[in-house]
Length: 93
Image 1 (tube, helix red, strand yellow):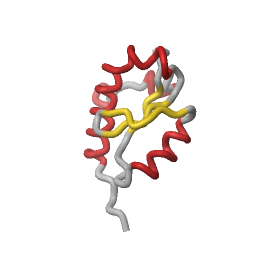
Image 2: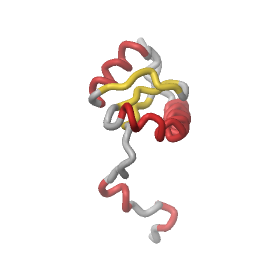
Image 3: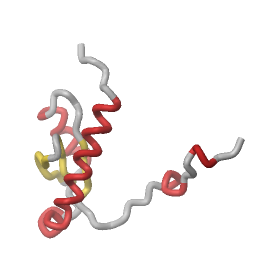
């Protein structure tokens, strides 16, 4: 039986991967544009055509389940409602 995923540990991994990915992005765009990078410990493990393919590879290659997937794109991503969300601390009761 696997132990429950530690949210803080997962968030730290995602943050580290994103930071490293942003540094690599300019050099990745020419070759891997619109691919999905599977990342672990700040390193790209592989590039995949779909996010589903990257997630399947992660299930096999990363037993602890702590990883992230980044799309190789320079386009802004619209998060819908969350793009325009108001921070909780500014909402008046």
